[in-house]
Image (cartoon, rainbow, N blue to C red; front, top):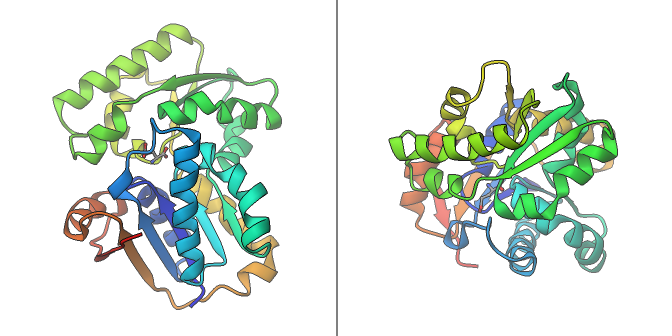
Length: 271
Ligand code: DGL
């Protein structure tokens, strides 16, 4: 088996995996959620790198040639070091890709006012990765970052439909709208946030687009694999999906179907 590895600190990456698997059902996939050590959002660069690298090395041992970091925090804080320092040492043929660049590449298609709000974990926002990547592709776009540190815990604890969630959704959106009244697009730069989509739309003016990353990342990966036939030709195509978690598997299964849209049977992984 040469499956595609899909990684997140927890459940959030399942929102991206769902889009990837729907777009390219033929491939084999392994999903790993590092729930035992989630959330990553407030952790240091060193810690996020160390945790992410351990998971990436595990994927390589499972036969993965390609790993997608379906987590903005890991993409912001670990991807560059993995690509530039770790892969040359481990295996130059392996590929690890993130979710920030594919999103930054297309954000210009969504905004007319050229003023975009980016919602993410504290780690993603402090890394400034979105400002840098978006302005590489679209120097005319003003990026307005907003950290939303309570949203991942709300989602991870299954409280995303509660009144408490409304309170914290409104709080961060009000902060964003006060600091950036001209935005016409809001990017959900955290793979957990699509679970809060209804509440986010409820607390934003209707003329603001709200963008989730799943389909954008799936589309970009499909184009990448079309271009890199030396890689896509190696991937196995049995349509298998395996799920692993570094925390309780039964608990993972209970939550995961909400993110993935189907029942899953995860296995516990001791790293
Ligand atoms: N889902 C992750 C992201 O996209 C964040 C979750 C976490 O803080 O661990 O940033």
